[in-house]
Length: 112
Image (cartoon, rainbow, N blue to C red):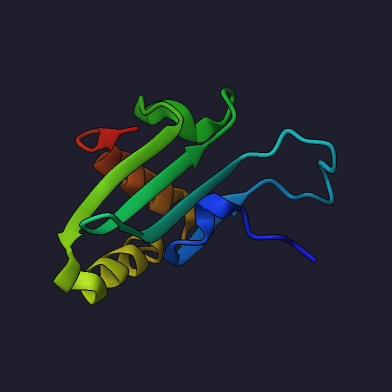
């Protein structure tokens, strides 16, 4: 059974857009791209968690690995935050295009 990390218990919605196959790489390295919506102290945030390999072909956008705050709304706009996260994570059928879109947004987002 997978235990949910304490840091992810406040996630309202999340999607792993892409990750390394654990069957092919059981000992790592583990790389992933994730979009999630979570409750913060005074509102709701949409985050982009980017963990790509340095030699990954999708690294051409000039965006570093990290967590990016893409969208932030007030406590009364919970559904808007979830909708934004869902739309971003499912913006295209191609995973590479979704990552390119997220990287484009990350260029002007707050990196944590």
